[in-house]
Length: 123
Image (cartoon, rainbow, N blue to C red; front, side):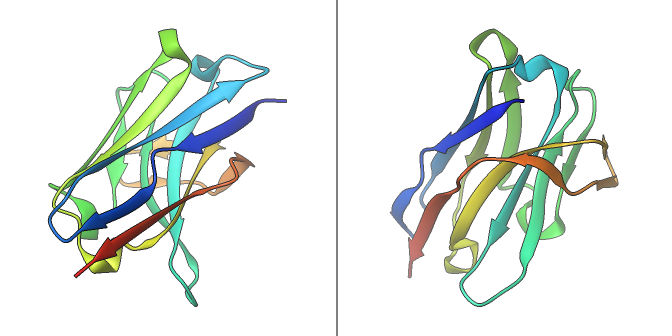
């Protein structure tokens, strides 16, 4: 089964930027819709963004619209989450996962998960 590895997290100041990567192994990323999720300390996991396998559908939660951009480069077997104008409330562990459904208004929960990468935004 596909294995996913996230990278790119770190500590950034308010208003800064980070780009998270989600790289697949043991399978071809192009076969999957990819979703990003995050879990802040003490909170439930939230959906953040998804991109369909053909990249023709993308979803963003309202809190990140206009600041985050999801993309994929299937030649590199990698999906990305570009995060700009970061806010302290974006602080969380970010996970990528394969999802069975991704559309502009909704996506399903993750199936195969990465281990997560921590993002901390200081105020």
